[in-house]
Image (cartoon, rainbow, N blue to C red; front, side, top):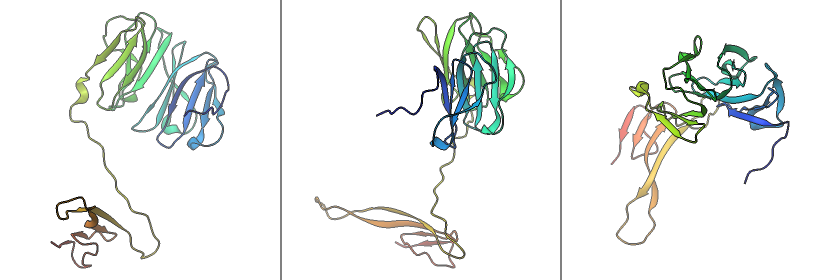
Length: 232
């Protein structure tokens, strides 16, 4: 269940970075941070003394964005240093902000307006040519598909044309680290088929990667002088 972790005013927006820092903003324009998901939320900054309407984090680089009701967009680069102003969107009444996998930042407003985009986190926010509408929250998934909610409770979606050739990310498996010339390894085990019936299978080693990079298939101790050892 959820437990209370702080009360410092009328909270209006929240985001988190990959290193576990949590940012929350309130109606007075104050930005609080909890470092590494530990301890209290501490007042960090108040660039503008008006209501914060949205926060987002670019997952590619931990750039943290904050938007204010009056149109200001602030960024903390890489989650380090101060928040600095990026642009002021003159339409005002900003409502939502989201970052795409392509490093584009999108902002909505509850005023009759376009959707505003900063391309590759560079330059000003410009309209993307969408129909005039009153928009609230906006979200972007890991494929770059954009969703938003308008003031009439309609949900909208745009399949982003820039979805092509996106990297799928990287799966990293790691063992523990030792010291000096100590060894470490990664071992893959699966259940070994038994005779037909209800007997529980025993786990056995199917592949091992040693700290030296040698690979053994069907063995947990590949030969030291063999990059690949097969053992049926």
